[in-house]
Length: 213
Figure (tube, rainbow, N blue to C red):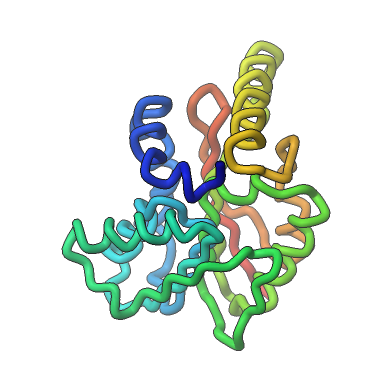
């Protein structure tokens, strides 16, 4: 199996397991950030984040990168379903590890439930690579899982994370075996955490990182 195999089922799996909680994380800061001109969406998956970016930022160009052709097809269908034009959206199928960025300057980077797929070494390379094509005043939105603070919450979150990683290692050949927080890598790339919200007893978080060089 792979993310291509999961693509037709990902939306209902998300709804059954989490309802709208993940979507609220994806959209937590979209109404607060400065309107972007050039958006880079990494690992967009089934397209719900893409739809919201198209709705809110009508003049922005969007580059959407995902390694799964099935996920990109699902995202394309989401745009059509919501009557959103795809003329300013570039859907690119490639593995981010092997992605060769162009000279485009992105003023908004979005990684929703994506950075948790990689090892620490991969995260370091990926974040530095993306930072290299981000503008000096770029914003970076992150929505993801985390090991919750507090003893009981941490035990609960670690059990959930273990189940998730076990499932995706088997179903999608996920390379990472554990969650690596991206904070240190984002800081090294010149980004500062502006705001963070936590939900689901600390298991989920949404971040707004900002670059000020």
